[in-house]
Length: 89
Image 1 (cartoon, rainbow, N blue to C red):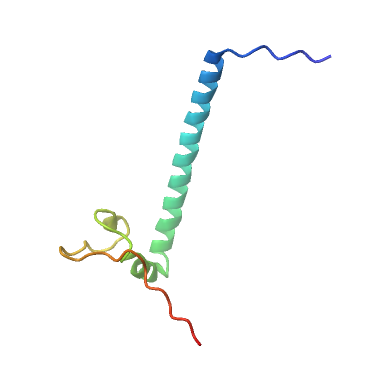
Image 2 (image 1 turned 90 degrees about the horizontal axis):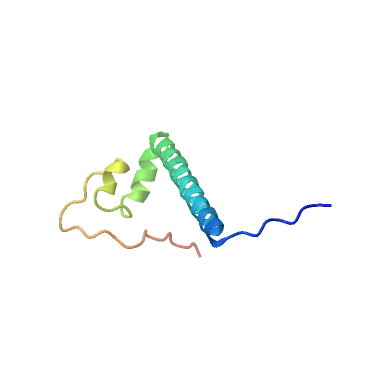
């Protein structure tokens, strides 16, 4: 016959919540690292220049250097959205 689980105290639950939050933070950091590596590979690949052209109007400030984009000139306002392709009739 299986044993009944021991009752959990609020301290036990608080420690478990903290452990799960730390684990989630670690998993999120690992995912950010993985996404960064994928993006680096794409930017260094044969279509890197085309990807930079797409990213150019979307990336602001210091982040432009991360993507290999030239710094934005002063007085230039970035567009809020990328241009949409025209639909053929």
